[in-house]
Length: 609
Ligand code: ADP
Ligand code: MG
Image (cartoon, rainbow, N blue to C red; front, side, top):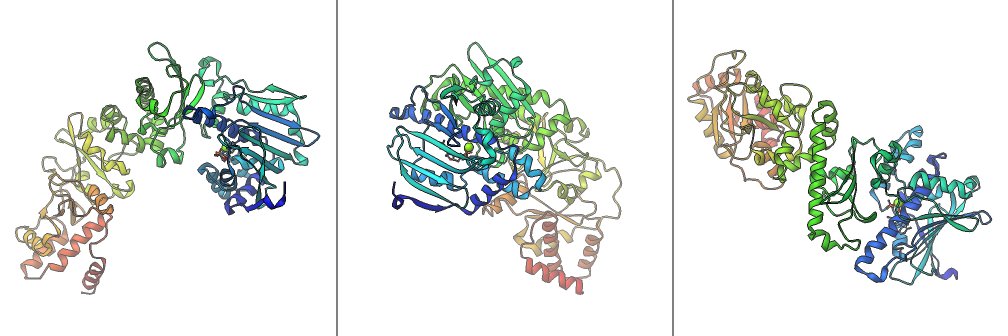
């Protein structure tokens, strides 16, 4: 091997930092290096099996396993697999940059953590390939991509750079060779390695062996945990498996069951107790893993609908052939039936647990926004899901559901009222609510982006229409006020037309309202069109002009309005005032004045007067 062929590459800057963190963060949890490397080897084996479905030439050798070979004399540990392998480009990209969002998140979290917290962080996160440098001062990865003959060795001492050198390997797969540090010699003991495998990798279905006195001895049980009867699984095993799925919180729910009869499958599903970023903001598809007779097939089978994408776990069935292809996964009725059954089971669990309000609130705070997507897009489950929705309300602290709201409705009240915006605190103080508060009418406060959409689809609950308080045409006059409004109502006959004339087409209408108590003006959407939040959203997405111009509603009892009425009688020109009022109404709803500079000019002039 000549030096001419060896290429030296710098690590990307973030890899350098992460390496540092991983290597120095912790001493006592170092054994997880083996978990990480064995998991990578097993993933690579699974990936090759899947690729071979469409490219039979890539088929795995029948005895494919992950071999762990410690060598005391050479002070090395070899972890070898027959998986997909990596070509030269993949070695550089996968091992030289941070490819994975999880690894990056570990880096971010570790950078933010106090020194004493770093210790537990490393156990919590998957830290990936770089954990090898906790026990090794040099790592050599020799790999041959399945389908290719070429092999390359990636090597690094974990300090800034790595090299790539042409190599040979008999068959596709990857050898990870660790040159063990002097203070990590304990890991050269086969017994120690076996214990670690049993602890961390017992549920991996690819056989794992540890070479002991020259002989490969099986180290993992390889029984898929989800296939065991519930009674035989310990809490610790569930927890380990949950970690294996990349989750490090306490699950809110653990569902483990076996279906027999028309459909045969085992399922082990978890509803996380914390909100993983990916499950909410990332891919919209469920990543529940599909296995066929233990073998991992894919995590892209869409086993649960997108509104349950936060659920993690495994479904393992007898009813599909092992060589099921992607096309077949799309089309097979078996999978459609399994999807339906699994979805109903999870939904059933949510409904049962919803009876305990405090318990259910924990789920709702993490995943309520995701579940609400189902009310919008899933006609089949809309009603069930709507019954699970929880809201903040103008009338009480904590969460309420639609059923609770309907029970508390006033006898004269004929609609369910909602107010949608970006922030519950701001909403609870919105002038839009004044008339409702004065009549002791409860309003649900909605703050998730999806809240702009589902109310129209659901339309009603318990026979009561759902109405946005910013939609025009809400008549509160039937409902008695709890306290008589203060002050006399000004005569609006001249003022309203004068304001409308001054504002022109900026508003559809200027009208008197009984919705206000403390505020002078408020905006309402025109007629029964999209409510104000929906119009704001459309404007943000460049769809201005879709809604009709709003109505400006005026409080005839407000001192300012009374004063304006008098000024008008006295012949004062109210053009500037009318525009300032409209802009104030916008600002109250958290919007910008339509022309901020003109607004500032008018307010300055008014203050100076
Ligand atoms: P993760 O496994 O979460 O993606 P790692 O840091 O453990 O993160 O590994 C980075 C990448 O390197 C993997 O995604 C994979 O593409 C590649 N890789 C690591 N080990 C192997 C292996 N034994 N065989 C094939 N590819 C591997
Ligand atoms: Mg990994």
